[in-house]
Length: 253
Ligand code: A2H
Image (cartoon, rainbow, N blue to C red; front, side, top):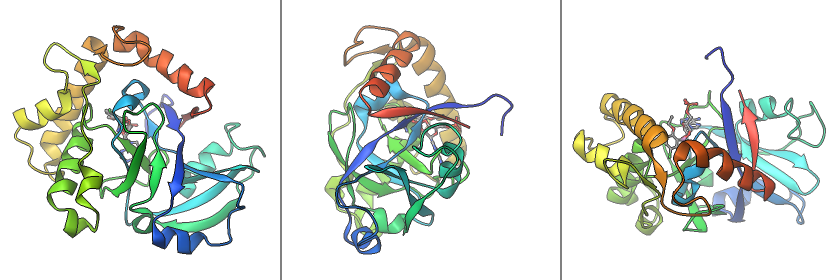
């Protein structure tokens, strides 16, 4: 881990309908009047208009942690331990876990994605989600993240293999950010670098670096309240807007 803290935005994706196995695992463990949220950590809050799904690691174990009487968060135990000391939970320093749930059992859960052109998206599997970073939950923006584009492409191609419905991985990918090269930078780079699957690790790393630099320093938002503004300028504004609306919070590690 680096020396400087990484400042993430943790987004609140409210669970609208549990996948059957998750519903079974959680039966009677969460108060009926409470809301549960998946809380992906992102470095690109200005891209949230383009969310098409939310990734979890199928082999990871997640906890459902009590943030307050009315709100519970789904994430890794490690993420919860960090959050407990950042004024995010109602009881500072206290971790209350209501239940455990396997990542694979969350697949298919329907969540609300704040700001997205697709207000309702599904939880889908991604094997490369790290347990050692963020919350272990990753919201997917294939327009601007090469990793996300490679994974949704793979999921749509092999829906049966992954045990999902094909249409869950086929939501339209809208242009969010204009750069000198493209307004769909991640798909453009994936094609250009001939990336054919999420296993093309080396090319994906290169694509990720290119996309991040060009998107951040030369990108202009095409959508939303800060349309026409440079990404550098708009990023903190979108973040503040999400936080003010109660749809996100600051998280660092
Ligand atoms: B980013 P850094 Cl549009 N495992 O959000 C794997 N990846 C994770 C993760 C985990 N446990 N937790 C967060 N991430 C992803 C948006 C995005 C991101 C875009 C473009 C690039 C990008 C939508 N996905 O990240 O190692 C999250 O994906 C490229 C760096 O802390 C998070 O931001 O620098 C980013 O990695 C954090 O990575």
